[in-house]
Length: 482
Ligand SMILES: [Fe+2]
Ligand SMILES: [Fe+2]
Image (cartoon, rainbow, N blue to C red):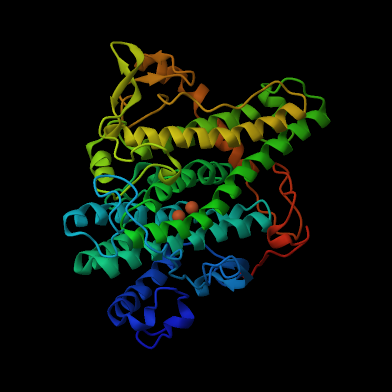
C-alpha cells in the first residue's frame, strides 16, 4: 500500500469536498487510510483480493460520474468521499429550528448527539462487510459474486463517508471514533459492533439476500431520516449514499425473487402440488418455500430491533433539534414540529395488543419502523406474484411485529408469526416452526457450492433477467485469480 504521506489523494480518493485544499482533514485521512486497508485485508472478503472484479466506482455525483464500471482489484478500489450537491439556501426542514439556515458547522449543543448518530451509522458499514466475508467461497455464480463484492466495497465507502464527517467536524473525538470503527468486530465477544443485527452471522447466500433486503433497507430508512438533517454535510452525505443503497436492496430483492422463481419452476417441472411437502421439494435441490418464509421471519425480526424502542426520548430530542427527521420529511404535509400531534403505538398491555395514541415526537422510531414495514411489503408482494403465476396458493408474509423481538414493547413476550402470544415453554417447543433450525441450516449449507463458470448458476437460483451494466449472460463478472 502507499507509504503514508505522498498519496495523491485527488487520484486515490475521488472527492468533491476539495480535499486538496483541506490539509488538516487530508492528513487525518492519510493517517487513517493504512489502518483501513489493513482492516479490509483482515476482515473484508476472504480470498479474491487479487481477482479482477467488474465494479462500479463512484467518481462524481452527477448521473454520469457516479457509475463507472471497470475491472478492479478490490484493495485498489477508489473509495471516494462524495456529497450530494449543496442545495442553495437550504433551511432546516423540521424541529424547533425549522426555517433557519441549515448548519454548515456542528452546532455546539448538538455535538454529542450528532457524533453518536454518525458513529452508529458508521459502525454498521464495516460490520456488514465482516458478516459477509466468507460468502465468496460459495457464490452461486460470477454475477452474484460480483454483486456481493459491489455491496462490500460500497459499504467500505460508506464507512469512509462517516469517517470523513468525524475527521472534518469532530476534531480529536472524531479521530478516536474513526479508530474505534476499525477496531470493533462483528460478533466479537469483547469488542462487538454496536447494534445486534450486525453481530449475527450471514452463513449462506439466502441469508445474504435476506440481509440485503431487510437489513440494508433499515440502512436506507436511517439514511433517509438523516438525509433530512439540518446539519447540511450529513444531509448531503446521506443523500448520495442512498443512490448506492438502492443497488444493495436490488441485490436482496432480486436475489430472493430468483430463489423463489427457481423453486416454483422445479416444483412445477416435477409435478409437486403441495409447497409444504418439504422433503419432496428438497429432493429437487431447491429451497422450499416454508424455509424461505423462516429466513424472512428471522431477518425481519432482527432488523425491526434496529429501530430501537417504539417510544423514545432520544428520537424526540433528535427531531426537535433538527438533526434526524422522518422518512420523506420534505414530502409530508404537517407543521414539521409535531408539538401537539399524537401517533398510535401498538403496545402489549394486560395480555392484549392495543393501539395507544402517544405524543408523536416520542413515537418517531415506531413511525420510521412502520414506513419500513410498508417498504418491505412491496418486495414481498413481488415475490408472491411469482408463486401465484406458477399456480401455487402458498403466500410469503412478513411475521407480526411482536414476533422474536429483543428490543422494545414486545421484548418480554413470545409470539408465533401471527402474533398469538406463547408461553416460554410453547415458544421453546415451537420456535423451530418459525425460525430456521439446524436441519434447515444443514440443508441450505449443502446447496452452497460455488459456481464459477461464465453464465452458469447454481441449481437453487434462477439466472437474472438482465446483466449488470447490460452485460450479456455469459459475461465474466469476476476474473478469478487465486
Ligand atoms: Fe451502507
Ligand atoms: Fe448497504
